[in-house]
Structures are given as C-alpha cells and as structure tokens.
View 1 (cartoon, helix red, strand yellow):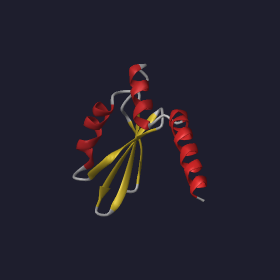
View 2 (spheres, helix red, strand yellow):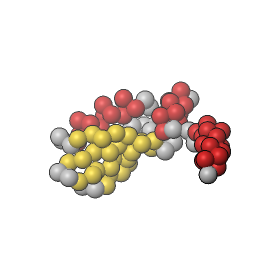
View 3 (cartoon, helix red, strand yellow):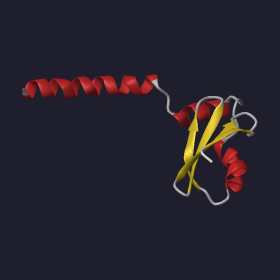
View 4 (cartoon, helix red, strand yellow):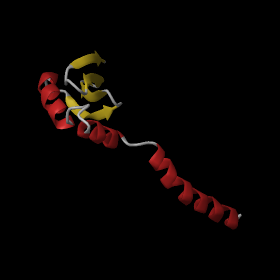
Length: 96
C-alpha cells in the first residue's frame, strides 16, 4: 500500500507542471493581451469602474480574453460588472 501511495505522489509531481502549462492563469492572459495592445491594463479599468460602484466592496477581477469581469459585494449581494477589455466600456451588469 505504501509503495502505491509513493507511486501516486510521483505521478502527481510529474503531471502537475504539465497541467499548469496547459491552462494559463487569468493574470497571464491579461498581461499578454495588454502587451499586444488588445486590452487596457487592469488598473486603468479599475480606475474607471470603482468610483461608479458607490461603496460596494471590490472582491477582484476575472479575465476571459475580451472582457474583464469585476466582482463586488454590497449588502450581502454579489454584483458582477463586465467591462470590454479593449475600450474600458461597461458592457454588462448582474446581481443588482
């Protein structure tokens, strides 16, 4: 049983780096899009959106390649703001 567990750990150690290379993180994709001029930098997007959220707590961003999705919370409700990554324009809201 112990050797089976050791074999499992060894297999996990070998496959984990490959899996990490297959799926780039949001921040890596956002950096690459900004570098190529397809996206505004996240801090610029945040400076445009945060003042409009009237006291809601900012929980963080997600990036899907063409839009940023900013997550907020106000009064126990989650609010999602979708922002076009290239223009910085708000293109959708949900949860209000």
